[in-house]
Length: 209
Image (cartoon, rainbow, N blue to C red; front, side, top):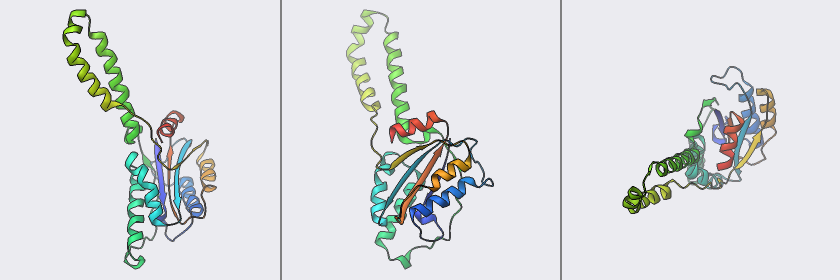
């Protein structure tokens, strides 16, 4: 799985989310970028606001629930921008937008869900290992307490990330770029993150976000 992201503070000059989507689309179509994916089905995460403070607030939920490095940096920048004078901020001259290689396990809610599933499997296996009634009766109280503690810790419930999530089906970089380029609005504070991979992987991410 791959991901590529672009946030408002990475653009060479202030621009709307729609213009930012076009910048991201250009990066997707650029064959010179390293680690580009071989397939282009994607899941687009997006969030926008009318102010830097509002954007930072909108990103706070997903940054706590499912930390994504680019969203965390964007929220930090937005929060700083809302409390400092513009002349006190570092001016960005534009940053290279590059593909990154990712795994599902890097996403916190996916990792917690996998841990919960693994513990549930271990729990089922443990039940099968109790072969005699005497052993079960002798250890019942101790096993039940330990089991309940493990299961309580392992329970996973998907939460709303408060970001817009869109599945995109594309057969090429150009098709994906064209689809991304049409997204967005006229807000000047925005963040975009695109996950590209197998449909099953993308569905897993969508289910927990």
